[in-house]
Length: 316
Ligand code: NAD
Ligand code: UDP
Ligand code: UDP
Image (tube, rainbow, N blue to C red; front, top):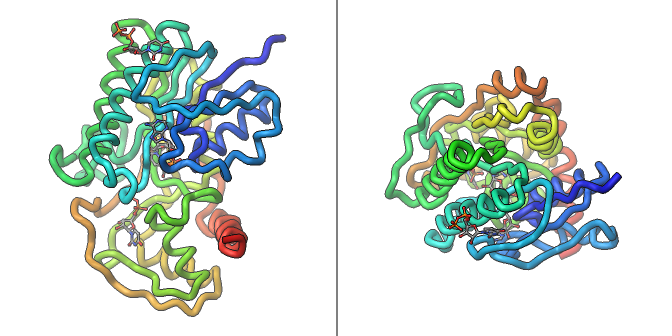
């Protein structure tokens, strides 16, 4: 039987590299498209010997002509430091990138997944967040390039579905962590783990009372690929994908210090603008549609993450 060929945009990034790896393990042929803005060859080095793995250096804001059966559209910087570095490019990546990937999917009649985000809920007024909630997003703030870019991408996906009968899957990904996160991207798990391993101060922003729900990468990959493979064509989302376990940032800091056995102190720094106060996915829809829920508790997922960064720091 002919192998299914799958395109993964943003395939050399944190999540994308895990998706490429899993798809290859499932016997798929994988094309990884990335402009290497935040992605790293390091993340996919171990896949390069596989003859069914191909890399194309390409920016998704420009048209792309390939022939595939399925598309996972993950290209977009995801951490505040990186997406705020060139905010205009961030919006272009989400919006022009979505238009190009949807145009591609339309031409070849491919099924397409969009990596949307819990950020579409902004600083949410309802808790936990259900897919029916429209969100509380500042359209002109420093996070808007990412939030509004992703919201517009969702609009495009749903319009291509209605207008062109395209098979779409829109997943709203909540904070995900694990090996291959970039150590310099400022996200909370990588920051705290690296600080704890180096014995540096742990920088908690604000009072650390804001909450997040952290999903281990293997669970997220199960969720994303399960959505594409195991749900009916009329199940298009948006679908929350995340771990409903909710922790304050201060709790996270203390847990990481304890797990690492670190002497680091906790210090408090100014809370960034528009930083959401709480976030927790309602995953009833994902459970019902594909019998999926995360299996890895925070401590169990932090252990391999700490090990990854420990090895990484020894290499650099
Ligand atoms: P990441 O920064 O590690 O990966 C993003 C990848 O996209 C990188 O490899 C980067 O080089 C590539 N990229 C960026 N702009 C591009 C462009 N114009 N053309 C081609 N490639 C481009 O981030 P990640 O955490 O792996 O996130 C992957 C996707 O999942 C993103 O779309 C992100 O918005 C979404 N997401 C992630 C999380 C999370 O917690 N990790 C949460 C919500 C949503
Ligand atoms: N596109 C692409 N690859 C393809 C087909 C289309 O990158 O294989 C891009 C193309 O640049 C176009 C966009 O997708 O601008 C949207 O395509 P669509 O067919 O929806 O719109 P149109 O071409 O009519 O603008
Ligand atoms: N945060 C923190 N210290 C850090 C990095 C982040 O206290 O060194 C906080 C940040 O203010 C936010 C939470 O941790 O409240 C999650 O931040 P991250 O950038 O990982 O994700 P996002 O805000 O996009 O959910």
